[in-house]
Amino acid sequence: MSSQDGEHRWWHGAVLYQLYVRSWLDTDGDGYGDLGGVIARLDYLSWLGVDGIWLSPTMPSPDDDWGYDVSDYLGVHPDLGTMDDMDALIAQAGQRGMRVLLDLVPNHTSSAHPWFIDAAGSRDSALRDFYVWAGPGPDGGPPNNWLDATGAPAWAWHEPTGQYYLHNFLPSQPDLNWWEPRVHSEFAEILRFWLDRGVAGVRIDVAHGLYKDAQLRDNPPEAGDAPMAGRFGLQSVYNANRPQTHGVYRDWRRIADSYPAAYPGARLLLGETWVADPDRLAGFYGDDDELQLAFNFPFVFAALTAPGLSGVVAETLARLPAGACPVWTASNHDVGRFPSRWCGGDERKTRLALLVLATLPGTTVLYYGDEIGMTDVRVPPELQQDKMSRGGGNGWEGNRDRARTPMQWDSSPAGGFTAEQVTPWLPAGDTAAVNVAGQREDPGSVLRFCRDLISLRHAEFDGQIGSYQVLPAPPGAWAYQVGRLTVLANFSGRPVPCHDPGGPVLLSSTGAALPAGPDIVLAPWQAVIARSADAGG
Ligand code: NOJ
Image 1 (cartoon, rainbow, N blue to C red):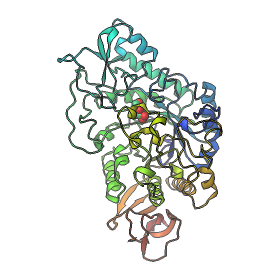
Image 2: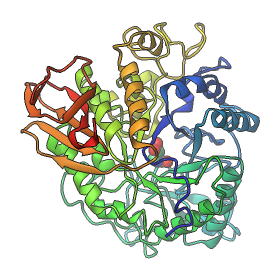
Image 3: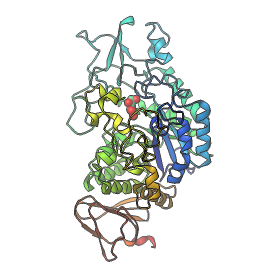
């Protein structure tokens, strides 16, 4: 059991907000969002009611993967601002009671990082073992069959030193070698550096990936065609998902727990745990001595149906260790936006999904724009910026730029993201149809509904994970009790009668009042939150 017992785990029952800094608000007229823009809109986030913000990568980077190729872990990217800006952001968020999480990328660096430049300088470099080097395989080609995130071999031949190096992502993102103890000490220092500055925690990129098989064994073929069965025909058994990675998180957790419980409270490790198996996901919580939150990708890839979502929720809750806090998200900068993926732009479905996200036990993570129902944007090939999927020959749907377009603040062509004469780094979506300014004024908007949901979540969860119990529901519907609330959700295009929750309806996704009576009839794609019968009205 951890030293945080009885202390304030502020993320319990909370709503975190993933903010893609480059696309949030441009305050210096270069077409990129920046930290000044985050500061400028802290009042908006406070009005919305989020408890913490996770900033997409903020460290210096050549931007082959928009900050996920770090060249200095202790700095701030000059496009985004300065260290003073970061300090001001943390302080000003704190004044509003919001925590700031940074994105930490420990699986790989940029090839422009001084460690890699040194390591690649010679086989005798003192830093050579910071990375994964190997000679050719038996056929004279790459050392094994591992593939990178674009489907190309995960090995780049380094002519000057006559060896391959490993890159699970782009060739300019060489994988670190976590068998090397000095990599551990470097990252422990990096973590402390940011926690010392008042950062409330980190989202850990590729959290399942740090260690690689020491023998570099071939990956086996994938077992099926489920969304997370593997990639490009192979299961990631040996190039990621190695058990030794858990030791890193036990070390980091000790570091996080060594910080005082005073604001910003316990320091949070939130993992990008890209795993399909709920037991494997559960493993990242350890014995409450590893990550406190592990992202749930099976939920992201579940169908927007009652059995699809309720099945993942039930299985997750059954497998997580007692007391572990589940985390639910539906959109991010890689997988796209749920109002498109799940809802096809149908606002009824978006509202239903927001209601479910806001009432599940644990922690909810919204992606910027979720709160106004922003959909994916078709970015034409000549304007695309994402090298990872562009190389894969995908259409716009497969290109991650679709979910990284400017925040839609108002109805102007660039959505108020930047000055009128400036071209934003990615084109804005349909700002006339969907924007913050219009929705803020409209009590019936998705934004106002989302804000009401967050407010209700705070009032009801009150810093607790929330107990969950599934309730009987007719086909097409999902009903559950969470804390003192009953949620009834109709995932079908026809009216569905549900059992009377016993208490009054507090919020409806359609805004419409429901006729009183022993049986509630939900309209197509309607969801409601009611006070449970046994909750004392
Ligand atoms: C996961 C990040 O979310 C993604 O954007 C990035 O390309 C890869 N990790 C590599 O860092």
